[in-house]
Structures are given as C-alpha cells and as structure tokens.
Image (cartoon, rainbow, N blue to C red; front, side, top):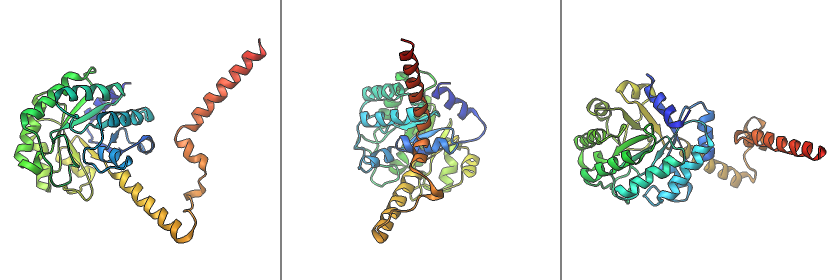
Length: 294
C-alpha cells in the first residue's frame, strides 16, 4: 500500500494518530520498531543534525534529501516539515514535487517569512494571509497523488493572536489543505479552542520546554485533535545521552557499558543487516551454481 494511502487510513481511524519525531534514517527506524504507525521528520532536528539551529538555514534540497533517506528507511508513512516552502508559490510547487517524489506521505507549509525560526521561539514574523494562501493553493495544485497530505501550519498565534491563527487555518482548509496546524497555543484553554473553532482536522505540536502546555495523548485526543507530533523526543534524548556518555568517558576513561550485554552486531541488525547478508549469500550461491554449470 502506498504511504499516502496508508496515512489517510490512519487518520480515518477513531483514535488520534501519535507521531514521534526523527531526524535521520536511524531514528526513523527506531520509531517504526517501537510500533508507531508513522514517523515525523522534524525540521529542527534535521537542522541540528547538520550543526545548525532551527533558523531556516537549510535549503529545500537538504530538507528533501533528508526526507528521502528517512522515507526509504521505514515501511510506515513519513510526515515532513517543509518550512515555508522555501520561497514564493513557485518554490512551493517545486517543494511539493520534490518531497512527493521521495515517497513522503505528507508535509506542512507555514506562514512565517522565509528566514523562519522554531515555532516555540520568540521573534517570529509572518507573511500576509494572501501570501500564505498562495502557498497553500500552490501546494495543493502541485501534488500528483491526491492522497498526498497537505498540512497548513500557521504561526500567527505568536504574532497576531489566536483569532488570526484560527482565521488563517480555516482559510487554508477552504483553499484545499487537508489538515490545520495552529502552532504554539499558549494555554490549555487555547489548546481546547483550536479544534472547536477550526473547521477541519487539527494537528497538535507538543514540545517540552516550549510555549504549549504538555498534555497526554489521551487528553489531546479528547480535545479533538486528529494528530499529535512530538518532534524533539529523540533529539533531546540523544543529546542528553551523548552528554552523559562523554562525562563518563572523561571521568573514568572508559566508555559506558552497553545495556543487556549488547554486541556491535545487534545495532546492525536493527538497521537491516540480516536482510543484506541474506541477499549477499543468495547471489554468491547463485553465481557459484552458474559457474559450476558452465
């Protein structure tokens, strides 16, 4: 089944879809192996993995290529952060085509200015509503597979207030977007208001230490959200684990012991080494059989 079709099926199920965030092929695989039915490509994590803050410093090509690596690494749908679409409506058209050609199932386009920043930082700027809608109209028209999901993200809450954010979300849905993403509501009341006021399915972004209160998945579902993403859950854990390992190495001169007597081969198995080894053996045996019969 095509990833876009599978994502549509997941969103049609009664339960809210919970999607942890990954930033490379390894972390995407870990999410799939943990049993989650979809993976989210975090833009902040993608930037961090390349040594940059989430200040809109990565290009379309860098983001789309990373999405392609992640999509090919898992068998579940990938939902990707496509930032502002990297320019005007023509750039957005190319953005959708590039992500879709890499087997991504969905992406979100936002209304920040081109030099965007993390949605949970201060100092954001947004484009006019008309410019935002032009981006969404271009994204909807550019997709080749009608199941490819276009998510309209608005960062207007931090700049112009919740009413403007809701108005933009509704305008984007009317323009053909499949889901609304009102970024960074700041109170529980605002979180509850978004699915009630927005005339379509809503996505909730949960960022510990960010602007939005952290709630459980059950609480988010009860509010009416259809999808919740947790972009930084693995990135923050990896940074903490790396800091801890380096502190231990510095203090003791020894690397941390691997849990449960794990071996190097165990990691490679999680990356598909058994399948690659099977293919190698298959073709070597076939070549030997062909040679002996010559």
